[in-house]
Image 1: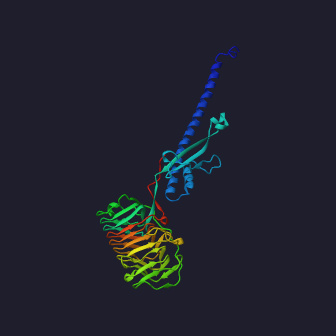
Image 2: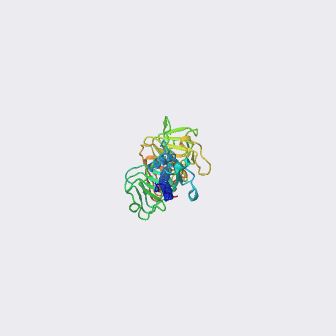
Image 3: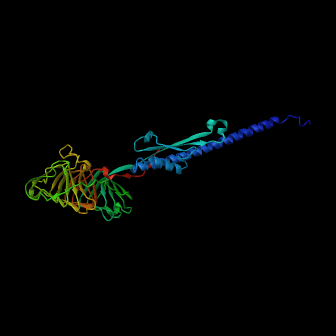
Length: 427
């Protein structure tokens, strides 16, 4: 009884219990802190991956899809936005700091995390928000101005001093051949980019004998190109060629919104002088620009659109001097040509499926403000020809420039763009 009534050592028990309780608290706090740090690291990984994925969507021309992709990638990294309890959120804040430019995309991933020990002391500590932001950039878009639709063999050939000038825009070659594009004999390609669908094409094997691609960025394994083509114009009776003899001629519809169909149309025959009225021209045979008188085969075609129907083709002779301006485009002497609705910006359109070659011969000098669409045809520019496209681009099955030929093109929104390089994490 005396031992039971003895109070020696009670403080030791109390201290031991207190220390045990404190120790458990520290352990619980450490567990909560460690779990939150782990979730924070996972959130950072999810935000980084989501930012890169969203940037790739934007740079690939799929703007508007970045939210869906970012959520899917966040879920793959453990942050599900569809959970009934404590779902994650994926937002797109404005990029800040050194990467605040429009070429970067920031993604923030957040999620409430339930705690173990801290919530026992206060309900406000029952969950903690973990959040992290990733910023991606680095991808660049190159607008397309030449789309070569042939899928086999050599579809781009530059030789003997020819120049393809696509400054500020790009060429895409759909051929899967290892010889898809060939440059030789001092030929030059000046372009922002050249996308080769072929994965086996190399510049070392296909650019030779003084040819050069300059600062062109070359991408192999690129996605194929295509163009959004307008509908074919409606037409009825096609009249015979009115311009095959000497004289002064005015061709085309009486109204700029009208349509005229010719079985064939010869411009500049026998030194004749020709003017092209604004409007839509449908050709079912051959559209032929001859050398004309005094170095010109027409005195102007401002606001014109040529549709080559059936098996029609285009021929531009040695010495011909064109002045063809598409609807709502820049005229040679200044000003803007008449509006042609859905055909604005297009000078020549050879129907899909028409494989008749388009030939532009030596010595011709042409001002063509507007696109040339001939997706099934081969285009040849040869022997000193010069063709300038202030606006618009080219769609063809193949393109062959030889003998000092000069072709200048600019970007065409109907052909889309290509991504140069991959999106990457920058912050």
